[in-house]
Figure 1: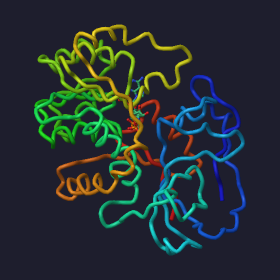
Figure 2: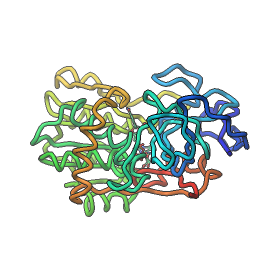
Figure 3: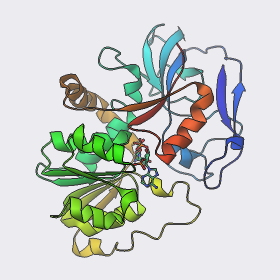
Length: 334
Ligand code: NDP
């Protein structure tokens, strides 16, 4: 079985030589464990953070050890009463062809291939989808009639935030993304009221045109200039779900924006950070609601699929550069 190891901690953009794809023996299963043949591996922005040697809500990747990440696969051997050979599961030991996973606790969950293709459990029905749903509804306290702005809007999380806001009765949904094609997708396919390419000009100016009456909620995937623009556009008692700050994940210097944070005082804004792990207990409720919208076709999603474990690292870097539309996944042969 092949697995990806991290050899050195990158500064700025990760380089290929900081990583290696290594051949390893598959260990014998201990009591309670399952062996999973992975079919889809996830690449997520948070993986860039775990390459740094800083304590966070998840520990950093250990050097010369396999990296971790979301994965979906099929059980090929089981010493657990909870899983049988042939079950499809989602687990957190990706970046490898075969994973030995604990069959009890939160190590793995079964996924339903009849509801959606298996890759969806890494995106719209997986961690990013739950991030969008819980972040908008619980953290930003979305209410019917809110005008919502989301950045990273053509990505895995952002595309769901905008659509869930629309389905729940937003007065206006605005998104930003990094290409003309992505902007068109937001309006034409996902039903956003307005969208703009943040590379076309200052975010504050483009947001003011897209949301002339201001916004009630900002779902922040990007940070920096986007957050500054949103603080300027938010109404009194506006709410921000602080989800991510991808504009600075590969930065070597702290970003200067937002320079207008003090506006949050007079506007009585609430800026709340969150980590989706805290919402895992709501997974069933999330799957029921979002799975329902998928079945009726009211909610749409895209995936960018890269083939082969040898391309796992380039898929991650490509995602950080914006080469994905919707969830970026790596597909492995059956
Ligand atoms: P996406 O599918 O959105 O992929 C990342 C996207 O970020 C790229 O496609 C690119 O799109 C955009 N991007 C890259 N650099 C920049 C930049 N400098 N400025 C603006 N946009 C940029 O990833 P996810 O949906 O998985 O994650 C989205 C965000 O949510 C990330 O910040 C991530 O860290 C965060 N997150 C947080 C979680 C939590 O628990 N708090 C859980 C999961 C995700 P474009 O072409 O538009 O530039």
